Image (cartoon, rainbow, N blue to C red; front, side):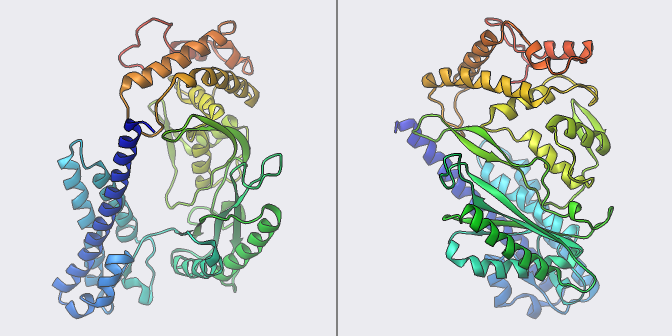
Length: 450
């Protein structure tokens, strides 16, 4: 490993450590604001307890019992106000250093807004004096404790049921074998367990039982992961639609598929391996519109566009499914197929979403051409993924790739991409021409995208 690689790894390790420390400090300040405000309002015995001290330091949750409604409201809002004030201070200070601290403060303030301001996670009765955050999940480092994790997940579902108990679900992962049968060689595949609650049933019990059954089936089919396990889930109260299975989280738009994925770690060469690609999302929020080319488009138009762009019918009409579809289009790292599709969708300056989109085979052909050029270009590349380097080195690699791809596609130019869209309008063709890379040797316009 060369010294530059050692320095880069050391720098990123320090950034990671700074973020963890800053995240802890910001969380302690947030929970401390709840405790301090309760004490100032005249409830020091209820607020200044050893239990709250331990919870503030390690659990990111405090409980102040017996508060009148007005006092409880003040204590609740003090948390997000303190976090927001800290975020403002961090933003004003700015500077090149302290990026990890600012990110940690911003993340904490967003979580505080969701729990304290929006009330996500709070319910009537005794739990109303608890102040916490929304979705649930577990990162299990030791698979030996799988049974205990399922029990904890059931408790998590029971807690989040306070914000809605009509339906819920959890996703976890199993190893995916490649064509030769090598376990885990193709990455992992998501196992989604979803249920809709009945009038006289317990959602937490339904979710945990469904998760347990699905986990056993997945273990027989795929085997079990030997490393860390991840569970992510969400419970729902349908505010703008019916409580149906297709509207239940976690959401997925595009089914899993195998793609060649490129990666590189410090001190090693670029590597390409088949990996299963899929997206699951659990979230609280609304998707009313999406901006493309500086213009906002309504949800219905966006959903129609996602269907044509992914060539997959919408799995549900709920807006959360649209979030999953958008992530399918926006998440491209390591995949030339997804990157080529992204370039076509977001490169030209579109003024409408009603345009022809090539078939998958066209994007696949472009991806194969790009991969061929990339394979020939990377032996001379010494950059490290994820480590900031001088712009010149990235520009050199970009120029090599653009030149090689232009040479490979010189006989068909942009027509290869539009071959599957013969009804494309002249305006769209002009837009694509205008956004093609500059000719070899020509200077890049100062405002040209990378």
